[in-house]
Image (cartoon, rainbow, N blue to C red; front, side, top):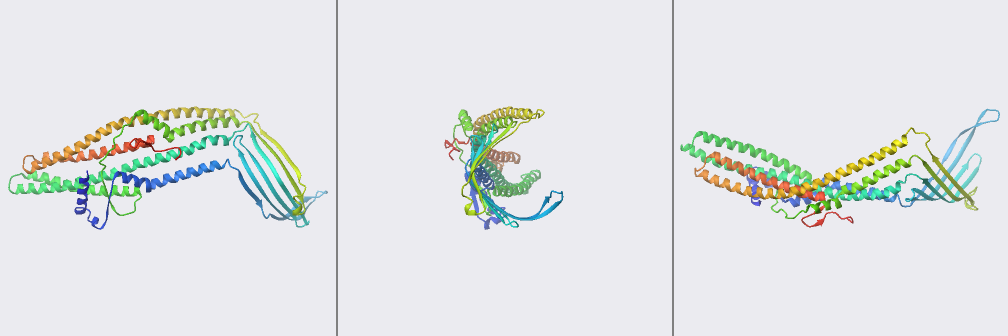
Length: 487
């Protein structure tokens, strides 16, 4: 196929794009276009950004289980106003008030994933001053240990520990799938431009040939060896060739712009694509393809995550009916008018509370919530089963289609060679007067269509190849996984 590209370069330089004389030409193969798309295209940058976003979401989830040290405070807090005061005789007087109130608290909080509670250790200092009464107080909590524990409540930390790692694993596999889909899209843009390039090449060759034939037929007409009807037929064919050449040039410019935009190219170089001459030979055992897909695809991780989330929603609905919370605290605190004495002889500080909320009559609200969660869980199982079946069927269809695509590619390649040779023979016979223009045009049409069919067969093969990589995350050519869990 390279000879067509070289011929195209020549035709571009001499018969349609004189601006190429001032521009450089970049030749690209299919592999180079795919590598550029994966490395620098806007779609690749978007996929990388999504993966980065999911990574930081996972880091945020992990931080929920780590201890958190924080300091809070109010420095200073100033208040001046009038306070209403009801006297014994029922009248109200207003007292001028001016106060300073500041404080700081240092806390260390540790969530308890096993129970869903939280354990905290706190220390604080509070300052109060009444400017009018000339009163100053310091209050300190040397240490305070506090436990907040839901009893029989829904433990989101436990469920997040099961679902979020799956979600992150799913996102990593999805990124690899996105890159393979990006490769598939690059194949489409590559062959769109290659189609336009081949059509432009065909239109230029046909224009040159028809111009030559017209001149020959015109000479024959002048000497009386052909009719005016045949001359007009050839002239009409020449006009059609000019029209097709103009349209092919426009299509070439348009497809080149689309390819350039997809790849994120900012240079003004003219792109010339080299048709792939090599197609890899490899076997695709159906059982292996299904197994790789089930082991590697993000969808299969998503199936497990969706089951866990449905079970989580059921448990959450069941535990929402009765809400009970235990709060227990033990500490040491003290108070003084002097800061340096506020830490002396602290007293024991104790607290325990058990709060609860139990609906007595909810008109079936809780039951409806539970039944809704159970129905959603059942529906989720049906959807997952259907998705698994559809996914497996997609793999089976693609594997079987691959054999047919390879056969079609071989036939299309041979047909291209035969049609090209037939046209050359028909052209030579026409020049010697052994065939008429109708038979020559038939050979020309068959040649052009065979060329386009071969390019379509190439497109179908490479699209299916990258679909197979995306659906299995396995490279059957190299015999290697495209994704590993430790990546």
